[in-house]
Length: 112
Image (cartoon, rainbow, N blue to C red; front, top):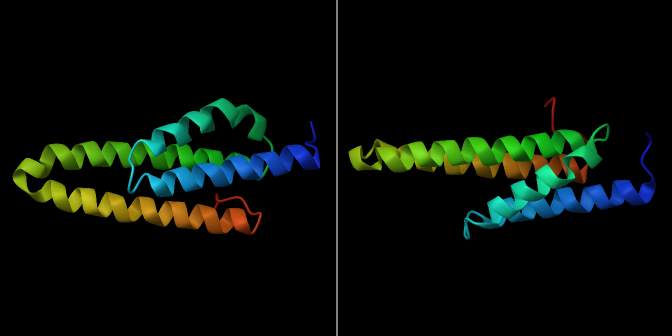
């Protein structure tokens, strides 16, 4: 079913809000949880639109970022964990910036 201009505009705003929440999570970690919850709640509405790939991208960014942060935290006791957490942090920043730029150009984030 074709989405109206208002529905597409709303999806774009939601997608932008989640990128903002993900970016804020670099300073206030819990905002990423709010963002991924929004993704899951609104995911069905994004199916078949350019925003579907952004939702998938944001969800994967959250789960992989969390996975690597936990691994890094556990390994911090042997010092290599700090490097893992730093690399995971840079990777997450890259994904937020790339997604935001693609969204700004009204393009799907995947395929790259």
